[in-house]
Length: 215
Image (cartoon, rainbow, N blue to C red):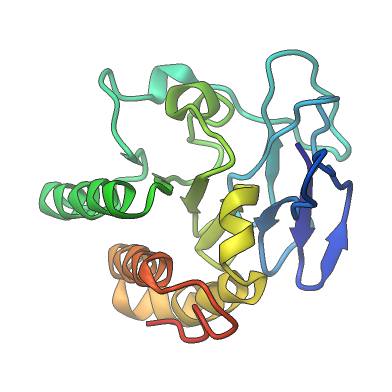
């Protein structure tokens, strides 16, 4: 499994070529700041757990490429499974319920899994979300963290990457994640708008013009 960081240009780290088809690598989209990559050998996974921080997750091994170290606080995870984890308190109970329902419906309709973590780094479950959510190639991990400016960060599975243009994620972050937007509207509004935009995008027929607009 391979990953790239878009920041803001496409910088490939590694590619994985299956036997019968060439698939694009999983992306971490983080539109504004320097990242930390963590490599775990043959099965690596990189998350944008804050605007400047990419944390690595795997079953064994951990090597940081930069000064910061990934956070691992499983005690911050909910006791029961949920596609929405809000440790920052950005969302009301009603908003969380609406987002859970939208995410559940999206998974039933498309087969893609959207997972939302709202945090203020370093107050985050961090690495613990990998196993909790059973992240795979059909998963989008959306991390809402205003710590470093743009509140929207995404880790995209390679099967999602085949259907959604990479430019969609940077445009989404630029529209609803910029500091002016979420400070005026609120973190909750930015998060809800991003979830709906992702849902609309994934429901569009795959083609040369799908996800060309952030709705």
